[in-house]
Length: 254
Image (cartoon, rainbow, N blue to C red; front, side, top):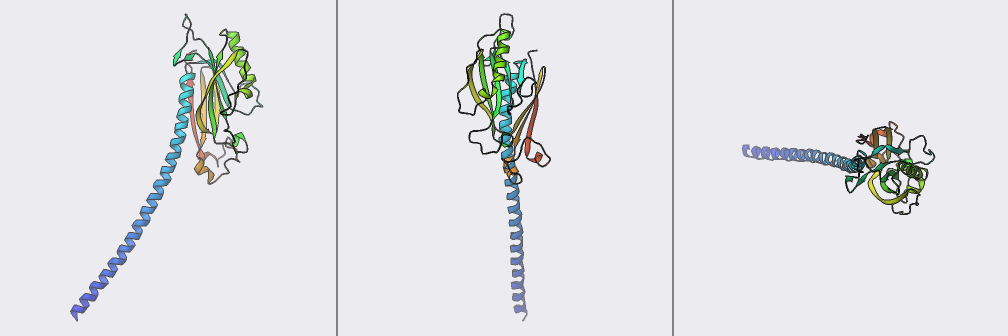
């Protein structure tokens, strides 16, 4: 009898062990699954943030490297009082003396402002968004325009011609038509950064303050109607889905 009891007790203990093992395995599986989910959520967020940071870095480097060595005395942008406010775009321009990564200067050492550099935001071709303010995929473009004459009056006239015809210069990527101007000629254009929501500029002589905004689109699409909501209107509901970069470029040629 005692041997039978011992066998039964042994079998009973094995059954308890098996139940505990299954329970522990189930708990471990749930924990592992949750850890994997958390990891992938973090990874996705970091991946999205990395893409945004790359675009921010491209924009910052392109703007800051050249503008810091250029002339803010000839700086104009969409917010100036003499600019037509009816054309809905973000843009700014300035004169540059750079050529092949060096600064052109005359015999007295003064910079030769031989180019006008224009930056602007443009919606991509066939953009499905209902308006420009709703588009999270705008492209930051850069164009260069050569001055045909370098006297101050011609420089002023060339800049004013570009500003007065800004809608003719700001063309979608792939459109290579630019109007011929009396004082300037088109040189080249390139894409600087993509997936930009907005670019805001504040100008104080000697300094230019920039603010670039991008959308964390995967997160945003879960909660807002991307493409049909104004992304430049920073409501409390929208702010969690925006990444913002601010900096100041100080001019070195005052």
